[in-house]
Length: 147
Image 1 (cartoon, rainbow, N blue to C red):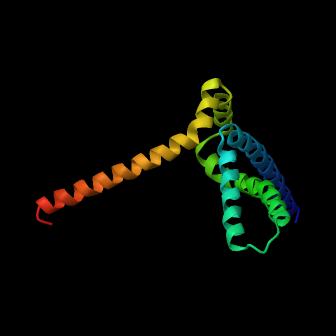
Image 2 (image 1 turned 60 degrees about the horizontal axis):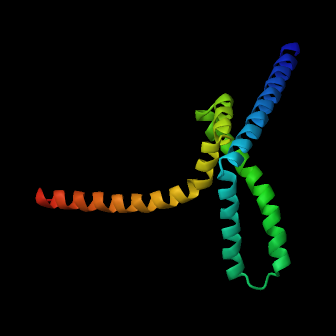
Image 3 (image 1 turned 180 degrees about the vertical axis):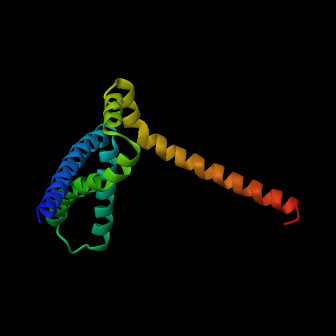
């Protein structure tokens, strides 16, 4: 019985310590998402979703949409950060997150964060063109080989 109680105490204390580490990591990740501009991108995505819903649910008053937007922006971003912790912690340590935060707090990092959405948008267009070109080349090469 004493061994069982000891085992339960050990499990509970290790779970508590793990939760503390996760909470600390989560706070660091949230800071990184803020300084990198990712949080702003997530907020824009939520706002765009609400705009789409507004168009299909025209009977809902503007005040309700404003209230929902504020509520979802708070809850959803915290929830998303919590959901991202296992992914980030699998590949990036808390110390590395700190280094990334420090980078984004430099003038170059701030400029990169500010321009990332534009770079991403233009890069996606280039990537689509590149993919189309690769596909055409593959099709042509296979045709030349008789396939």
